[in-house]
Image (tube, rainbow, N blue to C red; front, side, top):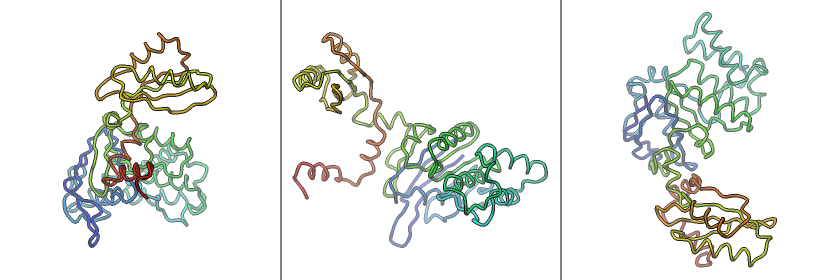
Length: 330
C-alpha cells in the first residue's frame, strides 16, 4: 500500500531526510518514532505530497506521489501535526466542506458525516466555532476530516496529542478497528502508543532509519530483556537486603543484580541475565528454597524507552553521560 525508496529531503545545506526506505502493507499499523527533528514529519509530508522529495520515490496504492499527486491524495487520509482547520468555521461546516471536496454527495454525504461524528464523539460541539474548542476537540475534528472519505491509507502525526487518557483510549480503539482494511502510519513520541496499537515500529534518527521491527523484536534489544524483577519483604534490615542480593548474585547465568527500590520494608531487585540466558525459573526456585516472603516476581520483556534512547542518541553520548556521572568529565 505504501512503498518508500531512498527518500531524501534537503533544505539548503541541511539534510532532513537521508535515504529513508520502508513499506507498509494493508493491515499494518506502523509506528513512526524518533526524537524531535529526526525527520518524521518531513517524511510524512513527502508521502502525502505536501513536500517534494529532493531524491527517491514514494508510492501510495500504486501511484507515484510526484507523478499522480491527486490520485495519491484521494487514497490518503492525513492528520497533520496540530490538526489545522479554519478557526472561524464550526465542525459542522468544516466537515461539510471536506465532504464536498472529497466528492461525497446526497444521502451518502450525510450518512458518512453522521457516522464519523459519532465515532470521534463530536456531537456536543458541532455548532461551536473551531477557534473556541479545546486542543483535544480540535484534534478530534482533524481526525474526523482525515477519515471522512474512508481512505485506504491513513497517515497521522501525533494523533493523540492533547487528548486526556479516556480520549486517547477512544482514538487508539478507533485505529485498531480501522486497521484491518487500511495501511496506517502514525508518528508518535509516546512509546506506550506503540504497545497499544502498532504492529510494527520504525525508528528514525538524524534523518535515517536506525531500527525496523515489531514492538517485541525491538524490546528484545533492551538490556533488560529476560531480566527478572523480584520484590522481597525484608523488614528494611540492611543485613537481610544484603543477604538476598548475595544469593541472587550467586545464581548461574546471572550477570548482575540491580537495586530498584527499598520501601516500606520491601526490597526490590532487577536480576540481569547473561546473554541469551533465561533465569526466571532459577530465581523462583531460589526464593522457595530460602523461604523468602515474595510480593512480586515477574519477567521483564524489555524496555522500549531504553532501546529508543540507546539507538537515537548521537554516538558517544551515552559514554559521555556515564563519565560525567562518575566525575570523569564536566
